[in-house]
Image (tube, rainbow over all chains, first blue to last red; front, side):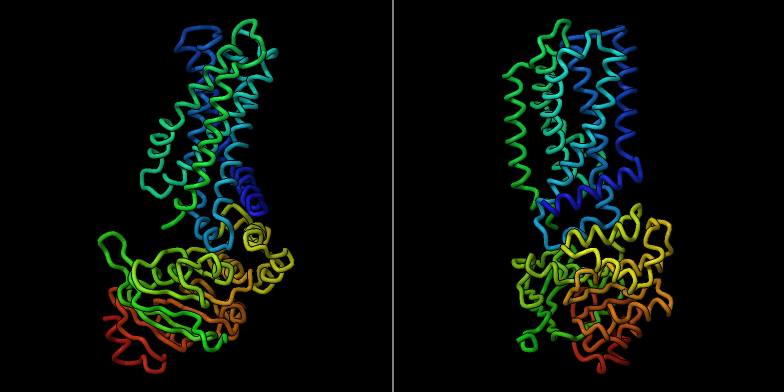
Length: 223
Length: 229
């Protein structure tokens, strides 16, 4: 756990020093909401349409972070430095997934209220706890799959393309579950609790892919 | 026990990258405390050999033993005992020298007092709060030396260790990575003269093959010329 915290601290410090990833994700999300506003030609949206717009925007914003996740490791020798240390290699998976999760949470702290302000018809208030639960579960999925795919893509020449091309199909089940769980929460007069079935699917997806990532990550670092 | 077991033992080592053979049939034995100079032209396989010894690459054929542990099977057991000074400094350019070393100290479970000790040893204590990207190449190399010896390794793998160092800095790092460190060392260099001055043994690589293996004092004249022809 100390190794995970060491790597995570370093990644957060690098982000605070450079502001490369999170501001890009936030700006991308805000721009997407403006584009949706004009493309849909609607002053406000709600229900399943709102859930789809929010889910798609968060997903594509997450891809920006996925593409950047291992860049410093690749370009500045961080992989070699890590591999030379007598530490469990899955510490890198846990640290990077945690960093990506934190980036996503920071993004959502800005993007979800902005979505409510710019596009959403109903108030967020009554369903806020449910939305937080759904978004937290999909963040785990994005963090795990994003880290796994980024670790694969970073060793290829076309890493900016490989990341989204591999990650998006893998994430489809989680994104369907997220959109379906959010839909009822973004209705006018929403009840406040998300559908249990979709929450369970999201949680199951998280567990399965977390275990899968834990099992294969060591091999991804081999030459 | 330490004296009897070679620090490094290679037998018929081979490594390929796709169709290209980077190393083939390389055998050498390095006693503990000795210095091996690995010489050869660009692309001869020097860096590949260092990366195999550093557990960063797997050998494809042959046997490799480092500090008594067979690689790659027991790589985990030797990683903390190897100091690797690579061509790249393995430092994050947006972090300061001190932040970089503290990060590496965290990975190697070394206390922060040791970080200050090595910063002073390489003469970087006063510049340790500056981002690495703002430092000169010589200063970055000094930090890279500090990183390589931070965890008190028993084996040093040094790729062009004095690159970018002026004579003063070179003297400064001598107790850490020079002969006086008393550590087993493997040095690669494009400059055979400087490497031979430090070496007990020489492995001359030509197109991935061992063209010369023997004591440094025998590696002169024709053998040297042949290797770089």
